[in-house]
Image 1 (cartoon, rainbow, N blue to C red):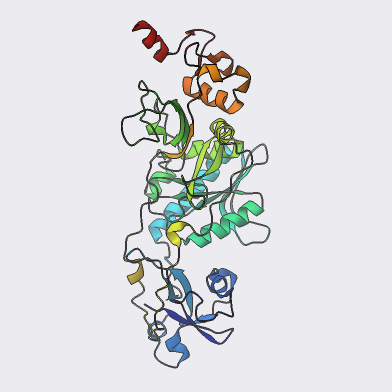
Image 2: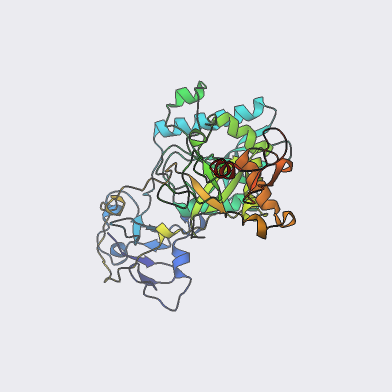
Length: 420
């Protein structure tokens, strides 16, 4: 596979297997050559064989000697590779029909509900075109991006950032669990359906990208295991995690594409980005109920809107083999570096994860020291309003002390008292 390319603007040879690309005097060179071809001269990068006057297999095959740079994937490595233009996937007739039917369904759903909706709307700088732009009554603008074929992570990031800069919340739609757009920006995954079924209004369930916040007290009677323990233990704390509707307790109703069209535009559903545990670089994007988002931000102390995921995540770190440059044209072999199957990005597992530690014993606690975060977490975990909370007369843990079904002692303390 080609690990070298000629830069026509600078008149230099670039070795993609070297960390400095063979030009330590040009620190911005990597950024310049990896920018989208839509934002640069398409003839900036040239096949080395073509430049040297030797046969370029791509050109002799009726295609282009011009190239672009992408991250390959092979054996756990992510090398930079040079590929001939055009090499990006072109939508098939079936994919184009699916795309068109989904776009029309989104616009029609919004219009029938009294929302402003248009198809193929470009931003002011014309760098991003939303397949469908839906505007809610409060001025919320959702830019739907139906992406049923492969797109590079950098393109998702660039277009999403541009949308946000123009006060449009991007919402990417995929049909494949391995889609690279998943968790690069707010997203939703639907089933791979024939265009006719989409057009005829067949049920279109959001299979991934929408979650609910579940909060529970980690005690032996809990229906869920401890988030912090791999065994069967219970930490006594209060856990909060994000679950798909089918994995909630009790199970939530599935979210349909029509639900998301309306709730995203009205603000009843909002996008959230949750960093992975122990890593601020990579995380999960999801759409969630606005009330769940408010509770989550109160628990974790996050009041401002959460950021767009970084353009380059941990599994996209470039690897440099530091090899001699290969000057042969490798057109026709360009599928080798993508022969490794793309990893499944939509795993459906619980994500987020926040634990409020077990509160101290009564003798060292004063009611005035109970924070709003502790009250919010306990209220969600116990299923009662905050004003019904109080301290157990035995251990000092927050419990339901007022209202119906109230008691002076928690279940654990009552069990210990009855056993005496």
